[in-house]
Figure 1: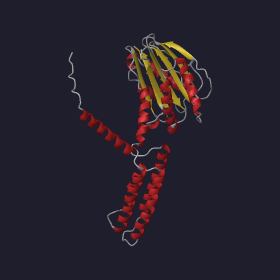
Figure 2 (figure 1 turned 90 degrees about the horizontal axis):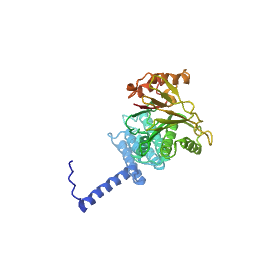
Figure 3 (figure 1 turned 90 degrees about the vertical axis):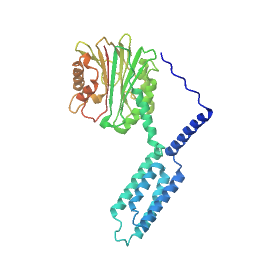
Length: 374
């Protein structure tokens, strides 16, 4: 076995240099993420006044030069200072228009309309960022980082030999945020595998924001409480949010990776499918409790099955089986038939096709997880 040569210790001077460069990078990052408001307003106001004077007395500064200054202000200024910048731009534009009144090429009304629309959109944008408390070029990076960290909880862990799992989460209309949540966990001794699939009520941005919240909360619960306590704890959490139309459906499964015994419980969610190796399947519809966030102290009955060698288990959101003018039961039946038609050797990589064949376009979030045993 080869041994790597140890590095020589770094000198104190080099360590200080490294710390200084790291501190400098952090300072620049803070400057971009939260620029000083008063200096930024002064600089941008000077630019706006310069554009007005330049457009008034020269022919090479167009009035449209106001647009980039206003857009930059929308990114770096909070709402009160952004409004002040727009108020500075008004007299600057007035001076430029009056000075060019006798110009053979007068100011086009369309240019004024473009500048006015830009200023209005910039104010709306600044107001939205101000409500979130975000400024600077890197403000949205915090939200993206939050989304990525929460979504990473849904990364499927590697299972012991003989077990396979694949997951799929496709937000509606190709959006970055989804009202569906898929979380998975393996116990430290790699003896138990847990999964929860949650479908938040509503669509669009509201469902996506609630999905992010539940992703963080349920990710902390998964593997931290006993399987039979997961849905009751999740129900209490959703009830505490006091959301308008704030309910969710969920299915939770806990698999013993040694015996193959799986316990499935549901909160108003479409039933899981247990496919056998002999071209038959059954719906685990006995595991059916109320929606999350509706009934206090609700009971969520569980059903137990055993995944024998060659068996598979499929959980999915309603976007996988709901179709226009088609009964939900027929949609589920079609999904079961497609799953049963797969041989054990064909299951790997089959989940995208199973979902695409049953989904009614991309108008709804589509999430599924397929678990099978060699």
